[in-house]
Amino acid sequence: MKIENSKAQMKKGVLEYCILAIIDKKDCYASEIIHELKEAKMIVVEGTLYPLLTRQKNAGLLSYRWEESRQGPPRKYYTLTEKGKKYLRELDESWQELQQAVAQINQNRNTEQ
Image (cartoon, rainbow, N blue to C red; front, side, top):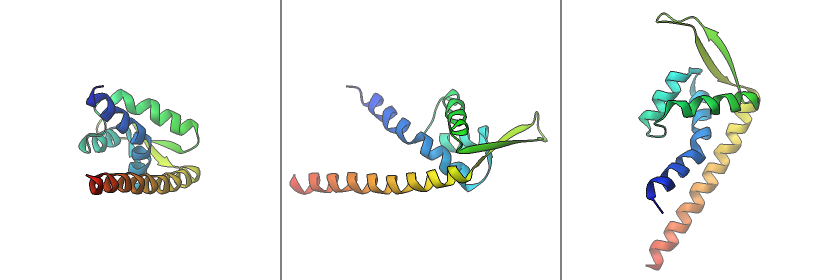
């Protein structure tokens, strides 16, 4: 088993959560989201983002609006819907539970060694 595959799967599992968390801070257009994900080393391929945004929009978690840009074509700004905010809060809870579970397993592993 290759470690890179495992790392990629771990990131993939939390990528949608991270996208919602980024948009929760402020309305964003795709390039801003990609920039923040790249800064956090969560995404390397830009084409990964667009299908996720579309899926989240189709699920009613996101909406968007077009805004004129001073530099180039209009930009599509994404925002969380009320459903998206509720969904994100549920993911926040699940993330906390997951972190605690992993921490407990690691603590038990370290004390048994």
